Image (cartoon, rainbow, N blue to C red; front, side, top):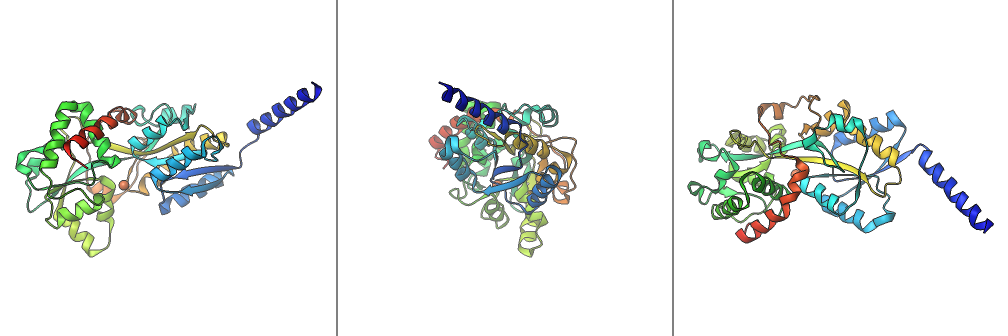
Length: 338
Ligand code: FE
């Protein structure tokens, strides 16, 4: 009896120590691997004394790893790209809610959910061949299904999260029935079966193999910033459209992250998430991948992005996109959009 009492007292003492001792390190699982992130982490360590142990990996592989590690996962914070992946992480129950006035004040409501925060945004734009396609034909995502575009549309796989998130947004704005018709129309308009990434689509548009494609804004910005003559040739041949300016706004996706349920360093995790929302970190985080900061008051100077001009973005909550992602996948499957 006494032994039991002592051991439970000891356990309580041990717990108290863990809870109140300041964390000296942080285990970060991240799908981001940009050079500017190095400065980001170094500055955090300098400001807080907290060392960052970084585990890098592909988005889906990292999520799988956290799932498999379960209760024993050393991960404190998980950062990934795409709202549907963040939503999947959420559904798996790996995140823990963070109570932070700072985060709630800095990150706009439509760019966070109950458990994760977006730290940067990217837009899904329409790219067209300036010599072959009249831009008036493709001012909206919905236009990609119009019969005038038979044999000219290219996209990456329909099951890629970027296209699923776009489909999820279309369902919420136009309805499932219209989105199903749209998907069938897009498939009927394909210049070729989906393959490659977004940059491959932009290159194929420039080469004339496709007339129109969709791509994330940072891939366009990367080509604009490239000093390679072949990339400059690509950029000169294509025009960029912010879709749906007269209707619901251009579809926007995010990079983001949250604290994990089994995080061993919870104080450090919250400190790090708050740091990512600071002016300094926001600029690094967004600029590192030619994205926009999630915090609206933070300005970045990125000539490639500036050259694309201003646009109106969809203000649908990115956390809500996940509500229709599974439906988007079913619609794409039935339409043969693979
Ligand atoms: Fe990407």
